[in-house]
Amino acid sequence: MKIYPKTISEARNLLKSRSMSSVELTQMYLDRINEMDSQIHAYLGVYDDVLDQAADADAQIRAGIDLPLLGVPISIKDNIMFQGHTASAASKILGNYIAPYNAHIIDELRRAGAVLIGRTNMDEFAMGGSCENSAYGPTHNPLDISRVPGGSSGGAAASVTADMCVAAIGTDTGGSVRLPASFCGLCGLYPTYGSTSRYGLIAMGSSFDQAGSLGRSVDDCATLFTVLSTYDARDAQSIPIANRKQILSEVKKIGIPRSLIAMDGVSEVVRSEFERLLNELKTKGYEIVDIELPHITASVPTYYIIIPAEASTNLSRMDGIRYGVRAKGVDLLDIYMNSKGEGFGPEVQRRLLLGAYVLSAGYYDAYYGKATQVRELIRQEILKTFETVDVILTPTATSGAPLIGAKSDPVAMYMMDIFTVPANLSGCPALSVPFGQDGSIPLGMHMMAPHWGENRLFTLGRDIESLNNQ
Ligand code: GLN
Image 1 (tube, rainbow, N blue to C red):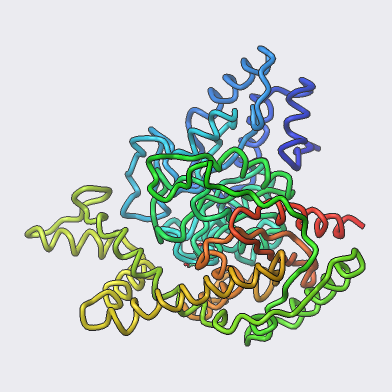
Image 2 (tube, rainbow, N blue to C red):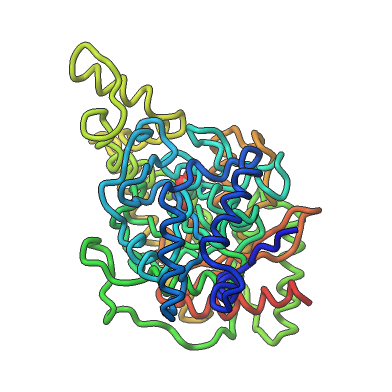
């Protein structure tokens, strides 16, 4: 039986001790993908130069070079551009699109020695929470293939859980790294907005999007965060290093937004496992306090007004002329309409229509304008709360991974995001760590810290992780 390294440090130890070469390790994962991925469908494609990357890593290892990810196979979500390789955002419209340049984070991963193994399935243009909205068919949860892996970075999570790579890079606009982490028994980080460059990411919601990491341990998320969170002048929202005031203080006081946890749709098992966690944390000496965030229950409607607006703006460039697949038509307008009509799936079309509507002259004030005001209220409330508590703790999801097809109503799907979107609305970092079970299905717990408070998340996250091992 093959033993797959579970974490980046396990993989690095194997490679450093020369128990295995990166080519051997990579080949082991490629074999696994060949054997298993027809059932899981985590990958849309394996990069054709992956073994060359591994051979290159081996040469560096032989030369005594030590880098944080040297020789470690990592999967890449299909909306991140890796030069010369397809990046389709799991959409038909970009089915033939070859990335003309590297995303900043791809350069950072390569500089850190990572072997980029393949591109992972996702909800089309990152719109969804289950990975069922891919134009190329759903990904299945490796822990129970009748269930979804979560989304939109569902392929990313499945690729790690199914031992088809060591760790994964996803993107998170409203929970797309953390929800799949929760459903697949992994850790997932959404970092402070502005910490990782969006250059070369296929945009969904520009004021929310960040690249995030998925791995089996909090340490893996921390390692990937260090690699990815560098300044990049090509992203206007990338924050210069001098302005990143890392918070180093410890976590003592944990705030619980009871109004969110009391919302309809949160399963009883999730509530009881959450209470069990609070008791464990109290025993460990943490102070647990209830907090009031009066507008936080409006997070989902606020998010689902602003996101379609930003997405419809970002995706207007996908017109069949400048990018991707062009449909036939009798004139230019016909080509536009046919390309978008044939190229975009139902959820993307829904959001483009909604976005155009909420931004239209007649409805801007009533919807988009109001939503941006509510977003600011929520942001202020969250930041104010961090004057009295160190971390805000909730479950990550309202339930364990749903069955495939169970959330076919779009609003039911949107409601799965109630615990994750407040971080994106406020730009605050958040981490999901596995804790508890619903039967055989893992659950995740979600902690949010003030801007640049990643260290707090890692500290508390490691403590929660250690409870699982007791
Ligand atoms: N489920 C959310 C949505 O559909 C989040 C997606 C994401 O983070 N990319 O918008």
